Length: 156
Image 1 (cartoon, rainbow, N blue to C red):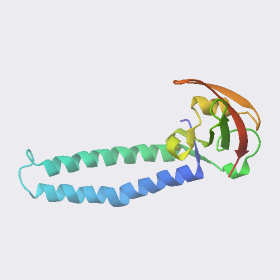
Image 2 (cartoon, rainbow, N blue to C red):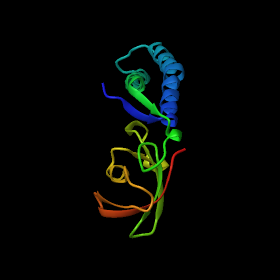
Image 3 (cartoon, rainbow, N blue to C red):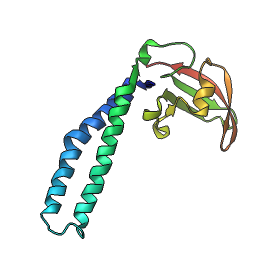
Image 4 (tube, rainbow, N blue to C red):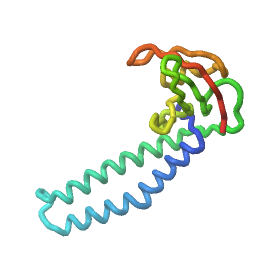
């Protein structure tokens, strides 16, 4: 099976979610199902059906997280340097709007654009990989072609 590259922070976040699901959410939904059963007729018991649906979601997420964590390859980005690669925090400037943005290139499981965590397989990340400070990259996006200049590369 293919390893899933991940930063330490991303791995810790998924591990915390798994522990929370197993230690808090799963027992809570089991109690909710037991309470709903006590109300009698299950065919018209909305509380029971809602709790069972939530249990199904929780169990599915637990399986997904266990699979991801078992295949995770945690990369210590603090030991990296040089051109852009996995784990880099890259500050770029949009050559059209002069808007600066900072992204960290992370694995698919931890990607979150709102927090500046860019999927390493995204078009922008693929364009940045291997480049150095001062280089320009062009990216084909759904909104049209974009050009960025790399201002800085950090590994923290």
